[in-house]
Length: 274
Picture (cartoon, rainbow, N blue to C red):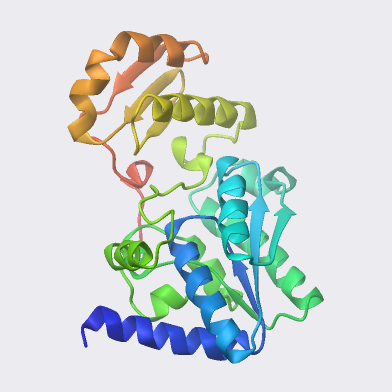
């Protein structure tokens, strides 16, 4: 048996046992939480357990997450709840400090714990994977402090393994690009601007409609710095005039293509990650 298969068998057994006490899963509709959802529901049925998927409606996450999450749950007949969370309630978070992710995750997962308690669900879970430990992820500290389970991290499943397993199980979002919160598009210590986030989301959606998949519009004052996969550079340049018109139409004065290409966490380059 391969190492990956051993991990999956361990994950299945773990999810089956945990489902007996009731699982409350933070479900974004991304590939990580979708794999947990798929295996968790399968094992819950075998073990007479219970799993409820919870998606957060926030001002910092793409609105498309909710519709994707709803569709995935409907496809499998899974109990799904959408909870509203307003990040603007936290003055500390609005200042966008370097530990922003910690503050945000703590706020969101305290809400998850409260929901779980009210619905007799003993175990809360989320989708951090083993590769996430290599990046600057202060939110993991909040997850651990609150006692939230991270089964993919626990069984050391990498992103490539997760995508491969999800595809083999017929999970429709197996190739879906990651969709981190919109605050990752601005430098730390730049105050949150929810109108700006709406414009960024609209711009990224416009570029996706033009055939680009991995997209980030990072904003530095009045400059829109666009990250895409390097293999799409030629197509981007050919469509440059249309792209400039669309992005400037959202209120940005300058539109640039980052020649380093798409990469997660490009706003974290000067952060002390200790």
